[in-house]
Image 1: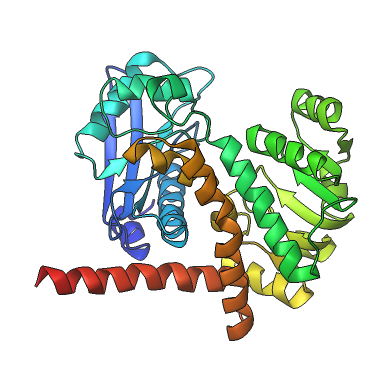
Image 2 (image 1 turned 180 degrees about the vertical axis):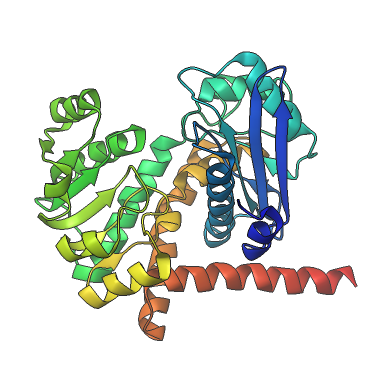
Length: 357
């Protein structure tokens, strides 16, 4: 049995809210990790967790990641996340989503929600009926629409930065790129890779998604095991987390790991050091996939697509700063990103405290 307060304290969360509404069937958890830089923004994930303990661990882990993502992306936002314990294919309903919206609204803007796994732009519209503290709504409703488009662009730009720093390569023509996961982000990423002339290999458990990528981009299908052991210039995890671990690191034969999936490393400290020792450049996932957050964050001031794209293109320079810091301090890029994200938060807290005296 998880000791809730002990678990929350270990990760330094400000607030965790359990949402229970038997009339709609809602069982959800909202986790606010930090509001040091601003209101906590993070998506809502609907997933049929085996138990409440798994849901709590997931939402705590994801919300902390959002704090770091917002900080390193130079956004004036904190980190939060929410999970609805339900099967999106069977349990999703208007009343359940609107009930969740009421809980979000009760926080008075301390947490702002958005689309995540198991949720859609359409679902955000139901939540918006009960609260204004929601992003990722349709363009027609004044929102930014599907965030995966700019997430994919950010990943592609991050690949360019990594290739420049690691191999001093600018063009991706004829480079071998392996994409694991061909959902929305993986699909849009393949479009960029095709335009750049890359040789694309890929895998997805969903045959329909795989066949669409084959047809649209000339992707070469291979098994997941082959993807993890093939000679590649770039391996791009765009599906499950924890795919990088001591076992997979032994088989990897790539120069760069740069993908959209969250929490790609099974254990961050251990696996980032193993990759560094092996000479594989790991691009921190929460940095390279920050395009989606940048996109929805723009809604808070009135969405401007040109501004959002400009911010996403800045991921190149954010990563270059991280790589330079890592080299100067003889640490992994992930450690460098963490240091820089934490430094921005602590500096802002000290500055803010000074002006509040």
